[in-house]
Length: 503
Image 1: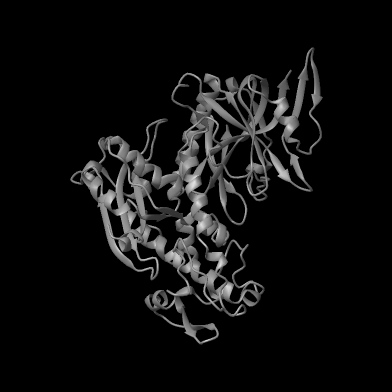
Image 2: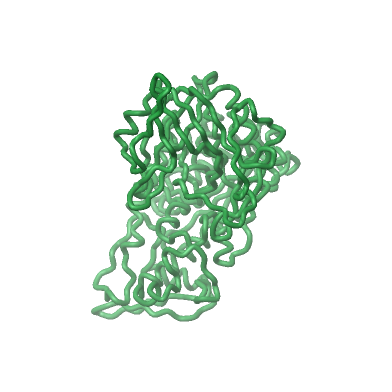
């Protein structure tokens, strides 16, 4: 592989089966990739193939609903072992790029090579557009999934097929980059007028020029370089003319010499090196499969459903033995900004679970998230609790899939190799940041004989909490099951309403 080949960026995507049982794992059904010139953002080569899994029964109806790939479609397709050489040649030593590749596609590639007993390809760098665009573009497209970004820019529907998705991924990056480039060129005008506010979650294409109708021409003089924005209908000319001033996907950018501050885009927003280092570090963290990982959960929110009939229904507190699994249902309720979220009901009512004397497996851990800590700890789950939570997981996952989500589902009950007979559940202590970090979970200390003392005040104190909830401590818990779907991860989590710590 020549040096010019190595600098090509490999945008890739895999379509997989959807696990229907705990520990089942994923099987690749399709692999698609394009090689892109980082200077001109031109597609230089493409590759796509269906893949026949070793067990066709893994292609369930749930899997077909997600990507449309049926058993008949892959009957004559090659196995992964038969395409492994091609995949290796495309990926090894190149910069890997894709949407949510760090948490999904990269692990699937490594798993597939491990199954056939071959070393997996390694990247020279990684660009996860989900993380990059969330950080640099902001949440203008809501959840920042590929489908949401495509809708935001008017690119059509995501097809959930590998080659189509990687090409859409590249187009989304171009569009986002163009908007950021224009903002950085005239930040006082474009951002102050809220044409494309960095904190906006929605954007109407009629409020400003579409990136597809813009090209940026570069004219230079002996003393300065100036930019002007002109209308154009050619996206290919945009790619070529922006080459020198906007190598967005280059890992190492050179700062342009002698620029005019008021007119030239600041190169700092497009410096990829800090994000490349951070993404590579995250990839290693995601590959570390230990019991103490926080499972990439989003921060807690204050949950309000002002238009939901469910929210007006009294919450029922139930012990595990009072739960009848056939009476469990999942439904969609209004959430915020026009979105919906999954809510679990028992016999038509919202409910909390109560369980006493659960043993703490791992004590409180503080996971920072944008300066807003989260607190959680892990308990050993009883067989009855596991049965209920597994049923809730199945019901919620089905509704999530039926509603069009392609996010990877994270089981609420954790079962690890070596702990087969001792499943665990992570309990989340609800906090909000209002005039300082405050507990929303009510925490009490149970004393012998029979006394109960409220733990501190509402203000969070990490040291006191860590000292209170240690490994081996027994706790009584009142918790609800709340759904999440963010950064291509989805599931339900146990959120504590009341916590009694036994002394």
